[in-house]
Image (tube, rainbow, N blue to C red; front, side, top):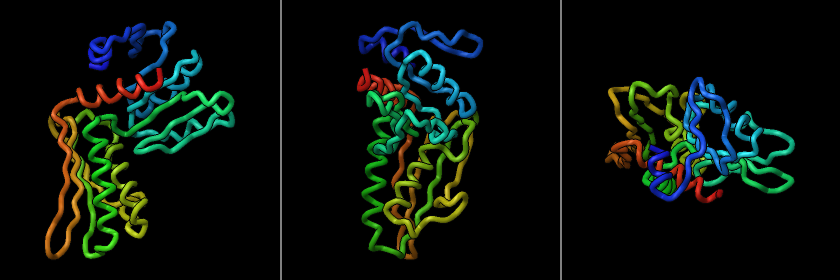
Length: 213
């Protein structure tokens, strides 16, 4: 799907890396990485060894593992960027979700959390639903939503792993559903993002890659 979108936007695909194929990027200007939590770090390092920056959408691993004296890790809106200290060249853009709609949802989540700063009667929680093949739990998007709320309302930190309560459901072939609920004795406020497919994630990754080329 990433290839299809990239080609439709006038880009050339010079390499496709999968299990069992040589890691040769053939002079690519940028690599887009969507794999698994156990392979993402090595894939990024292999791309860097060939001088190729990476847009990565793999979740369930810690970007902090890539810290190095020659690199600088920067926090950006709903993601992280790694640059070379010597040249300031961006070598990695990582987000828990590249979907345009999800990033709008992130913005709404921050706005709602800010509005709740003066409403202590509300208690937040998060539910995420994904297909049965998804390896990480909770999803990276759910973690980002929780981190956004905690940053605005640090007193709410708690639950499993120091985060707000996150319920993870794995069923069928669900592309991804995320719900943020604020509950009180008087009423409940819910915001929800429902992905209808994976195209939105792929498009967002291609758009991010275009910003680096």
